[in-house]
Image (cartoon, rainbow, N blue to C red):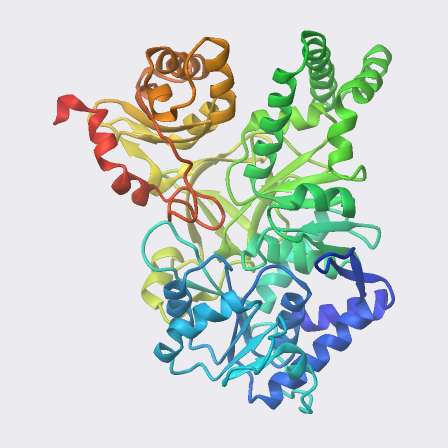
Length: 588
């Protein structure tokens, strides 16, 4: 069984049903049936054959989510080729590195903007023979570039280079927080084992619609928002961009949606901001509704049925408080799925109080990716779920999470040394994450092994739980805890500027000059109070004693975050070195 055989089986079963949906500029969403998708995949595969693509050749994809991405993926796999997906946000230099390291023969780009990146480094990639562009180019097509539609019209022969389950399907380059990315080799069998494990836990069917906006170049969306739904008869609607997700959600009315925690945090922040701007009566109704929802949520988590009175109150709360939130998701949502980073437990609890379940899972690119997941039949907030069927998970003596099974990658491309560092002689993959497995079998992540802060007194501190607690404050948007080899912890804090400005105005503090406002004694004391109140349950050595308020959010554009919105701690520490040193004057 391969990804192509599973795709072909889905086409046969769901033939005329919609597989994909996209929204042309200025238009409305248009469906593409499974049969139409299959025809496009076959045509593109033949076109690749005509261009000389053979089994095991690498076909790179540099594009936003769109139908051509799916067609390129399956069309390449149909020829026995290996896809090399890339984040559309990468720079020309980063694209050049991946093309050279993978030895890509073809690259498919979405737009002329992406084409410019390739042109800037094309001479540095001797293996690159052809560039295929999805968008139509006005005027004459440049030499060495061919239109996607033209490739589909090439009279190539059907490939005889069909892959086997042990063949490499894709090489995904880890975004990495340090050093050059490594190419993770995932086989057809890796993906299929994970697809089957996920499908056994979560019922996805032809009645489901997914809104896809996380990059398909990331394994989380590739597995959960691409292969699982297409092999289940569901429809995938592509968001126009990350900036139109809210509007597209209303248009598409998804039943299932995958996201990283930042989307849920942003939705939560907007709700609280709207409440703060409302009348005192509206605020009271909101808080009453949340308390009712929390009581219902608590009963459900304990396996109990809410009382008749509580159910009546819930119906009222849904109409008065939560109806608009559900409307904003399109009104048909069965559940959200969260991955890629830690989801604050408070966010999961808030949404469940509102009647929306967020299912958090855990995995890595190297594990195809899912290791554990919460699912509708078994979930626990504050955990990443129980291990999925067919794999092994154990905790090493130092607390590191290890896993073994058919989901573990074949290795890093052209890097046996790095492979040997993470897969031991018994086949255990060392995740680099610290965690526990509780009495009920749920996995809980503490932090990344390399992120552990060792204070000068020898105490080990996991920064992630502290950071997750601090961002619960309505006045804190982002935070990074530091303190390695110091006496105590400090934090770089990006405030929630809107909320903080509103608070400052209410307290007669000038807000026109952001820098000056952040340095006022009142604002500093307010943030200090927020820190203290949030960390009351943490040990003395886990308290954040100093902090600095930053005037700009951490971002991908400034190379401070990965494409999956993880903080690049080493980059941030280097960039804000002077600020950090300023928080430790006694060490100067």
